[in-house]
Amino acid sequence: QVQLVESGGGLVQPGGSLRLSCTASGFTFSDFAMSWYRQAPGKERRLVASIGSPDINTNYGDFAKGRFTISRDNANNTVYLQMTSLKPEDTAVYLCKASKASRGLIYWGQGTQVTVSS
Image (cartoon, rainbow, N blue to C red):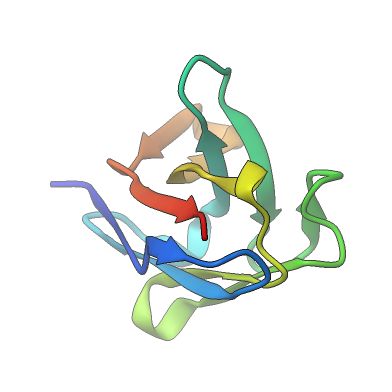
């Protein structure tokens, strides 16, 4: 059974930092590209960052460049999103996605809420 479980969200003040984790099971993690997306109420889902495997090439949404860092630990089936200098507009549900384009496979987690507010 495929599972992607996000954690690490919460309430943080503007300028603060959070580290999100997404732990995977039920598939060969190292074969999949991993991404973080976010979705705010009433807005469409947007790519935050992605990381390949095994090439570990990374890609970031413009709003994430210079503030967020994606990384992965294939030994522990986990992808991370380190977020710094958080702004109120970063408030959203952050979702983890696993994809393998060659097989047309996409898996999503349930998401973790990030709220940036004073």
